[in-house]
Length: 165
Image (cartoon, rainbow, N blue to C red):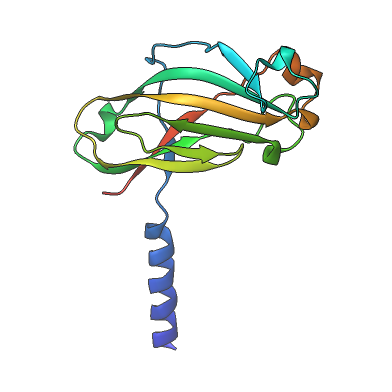
């Protein structure tokens, strides 16, 4: 009986200690408010409005700079995740949208769909800010959007931190 209770207590301790919390990082110091897409292409590689029966919209945002507040975590080992919110106004299915990024100096390249997050950096937090820029592109299946999306496409990706120790 004691052995069973000890095993249960050990398992509970592992579960409680093993799940590190992710916290959204403040990115309000980033040099951007709203980012407009200077170029929207179809899968044919030409501007969307000039395409005949396009199936995809490829929204190219260009280089997007991020300045993440990490002052509370200086000296700690951590993981940073790039997150695409689950809800995107006007999008009928998360499977119909893909966010791609690359070209960053610190952050690993990757690809996500709404409602997902991906590890982009692991290391020791050395200062009050982590700054980087990435080439950001979004691909959307046009059959999966409604008029809301077509008139005013917007979504707010963000970063989360997970302290390792």
